[in-house]
Image (cartoon, rainbow, N blue to C red; front, side):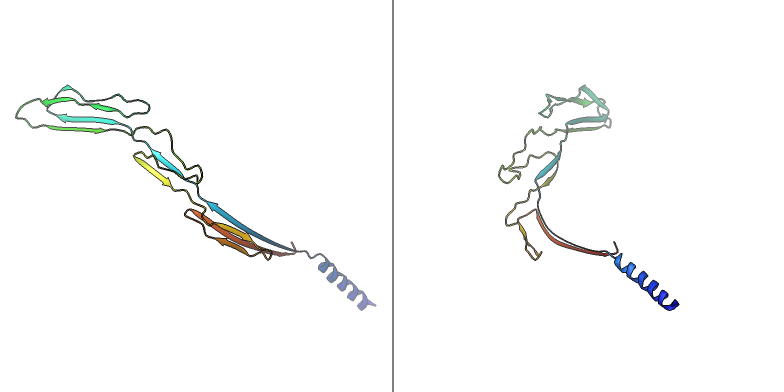
Length: 167
């Protein structure tokens, strides 16, 4: 009798553990298609003027003139002469005329790309992608098919399979 009770208890424990098992299976198929957009980033350089020296007689110092919110400055030159004839001197004059402000950027309405880039002194430009033959499909069997497109495009087909036991 004792042996029978032990066999029944052991069998009950084994059966209970098997009934608690849970199996989960997941299959995910995806296709991702990307066309890069056009973009431009500019840094506009401003105007500047500097003069320095020694043994220089300054009648009128040069100045930046006529600057506005959209136009760079111009330059009115200075009037300089040597202060002591026959003595050593040094003179330095530097001018930078800044960029004209550009307020619009032309784009192709159909493709969304830049028609002509408006640029300043420092530029970073991303050319827009073109769809071309870019395509992607999923079949009933879950096999992804991707077709390369034009410049600036990406096509990715992916299948993810996960199986968990005793989740």
